Image 1 (cartoon, rainbow, N blue to C red):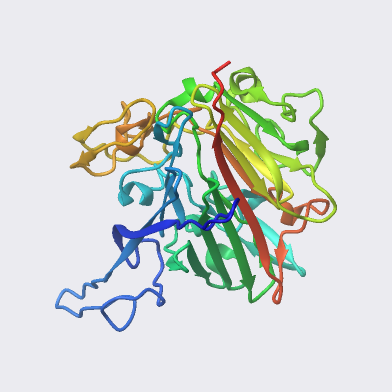
Image 2 (image 1 turned 90 degrees about the vertical axis):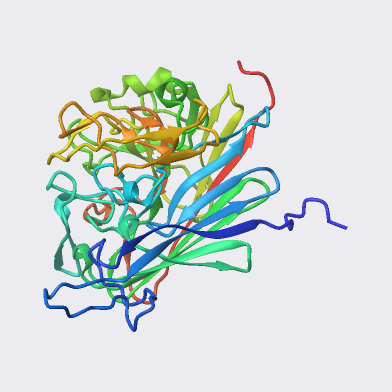
Length: 442
């Protein structure tokens, strides 16, 4: 007989394949990736002196619980592809943004860190430089050729992770980042454990160790819309948000990187301590780009997992609670989603998609006989992202709550330290807890 309050019912995990890439597709020759050859690739010496590489299979993992909740992960970027949850009427919808195919995930002009791990250092590092023990390091400048963002061009979200199922109850993904990658010192070994529970929590446990003093600051970049991934700005504005944060790291209007000053949120548009509807606050944020700011979490002296944020959507009844042990949280409301211009043009492709999908972003069946789609009157403009099931993702169509250390902490003395040293372990425990309110919409 099952004991009361026992969470011991089986969680189902199914392994599959999401696609494959060549071993050098993300500018790495990873000798830990198994293939049919003696190394990560087999080189064929032909008369043309061409090299041929064995493909690397990108694994997928579908986790389901007894409450009708389903989470799909892939080993590219340790990415969450979908999260399906029932609403208060029992209707299931996919509530995170993502893509149907691996090719779109591989395209950096379309996939701007959607649903993946953010690291080796999440968020910005000013001018792509920092010092540790009087040694200066120069990182890849992948944010407007000025600053370093989310680990660089081939950060953790654009790498192939080594996945496996442990004890039939959770998925573990691991990655070895070599000394010097993207300019960072030290080899860093990182593991991430994903566990779905029967109380509808998705637990993400991040751990890292290093061979040299370096910077580590990990988070996860899932973009949510609790009404369904395809419902866009209309339903996002009906969400209510609260943050357990009494201060924020001040930034100048035109510069996304904190100046080093920390300001109280009281009496400002940054005060989200009491639940506020998105439509009442997003368009009041300076520059009309909504929120993309780091807030300082209210916490006790000892770091521990605590409630960071609560977001709800009355019409569907869904709510999301975010728990973490990090000192800060980046709150983002999709202001940098398309339309936007590219630095370099790209050719548009003709695409024939056949999908069934309601505006709620629920289950669908899709077929596509095209390459990655970039939409715009000129090939240098992206009007929307081609999301799952033919959905068009546009500005203010989703939000993200990303617990982490403060941005650019390595360069600001009064921010919490982001330096990891040999013999130490980096810890970040992140929990997404989903639920429904059964009362009628207000």
